[in-house]
Length: 424
Ligand code: AMP
Ligand code: GLY
Image 1 (cartoon, rainbow, N blue to C red):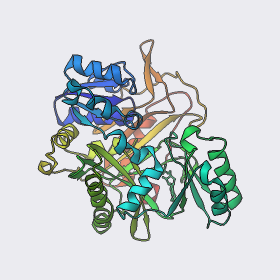
Image 2 (cartoon, helix red, strand yellow; image 1 turned 90 degrees about the horizontal axis):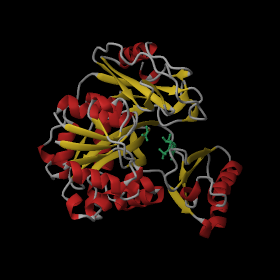
Image 3 (cartoon, protein in one colour; image 1 turned 30 degrees about the horizontal axis):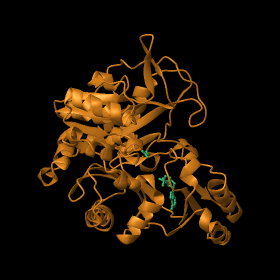
Image 4 (cartoon, rainbow, N blue to C red; image 1 turned 120 degrees about the vertical axis):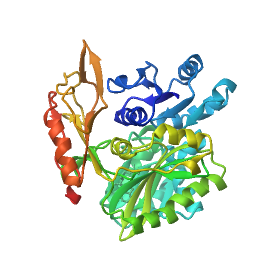
């Protein structure tokens, strides 16, 4: 197929890698990165430039569009394609603007879960209109308490408060000082759930679904999950604690009600659903929905998926998901992310990367924040690249990923040595 993948991170590199390994496609990636350039044609168009994306699809007669990141979805790229007859014909993987609110508005997601009786933390929502009531609510809320900016805040909009004073101050900053811009004009206040997290990924057409390999990511910058939150420092798949009995609960209580909810509420949703879960005692609760794949989870999910993800996406867009049998590699896959020193705070860019051409045996180096400058691949973002390797155990896969990163060098490179530590 002629496919356009939108995005430029490790997630899009992994999607394109799977498509080329398992299928034979003519791939275009917009804007892509030096890693995706080896798998198809990079197209210098930004993910939010809908006019240029539409024009490119018409010109190249693209058959399917797969959207990587959330922003164009939340901004309505699906609706843009639907509004033009020539673009409407193209198979499109990504929900409508309305459906993308599952990620774009925490309050929308919580209300959806409440309507569909999907287990999640208890919550209230507040704006300027009921600000004083919010303050009173927070002054006596059990601790810790979780405050979430309603809108997209680049992964930074969640604050876990240990005291009522901190919660009140944070609440004021979010609503009155727009700490996260427009995103925090509305705030969701949630009860804190204590447990271990993991993620489940679906491809759905809003009625049927298939479940992709599960994963667990490591969000904190420091070892043993210390320090600031990042986009993700590594991931493991499968997740050792997510046994068949637990996954049956996830299916019955969360996955089915979610997709049935789309159908009942007439939410147009053809695309990926990323369900962030927390296991409390032995029961799953939803922490968040995302309307896309995770990054770096995709960098372990795609290597373990034996199917061609493009064939699964096509089946979703053609309402044939019941024909798909997902096949998973029985081995464990682990990815370890190498980041620029200083990330997730300030960091320098433009450092030359060495070791990308090392021979790899059944392992993959996915690129994220990289670009070509003067004929060399250099760093161009916080999360620079990640090494995915397989193993019969988590420790074996981690050792292999780390051995690859030991052969990679750029100035101030940092990576966590302890990915998968709870399972080693
Ligand atoms: P989110 O952006 O909603 O995924 O939240 C970011 C992180 O905050 C999650 O991965 C959790 O670690 C944590 N978190 C969010 N909501 C809760 C909650 N209700 N209880 C405990 N931790 C939470
Ligand atoms: N790794 C978490 C995310 O993609 O949101």
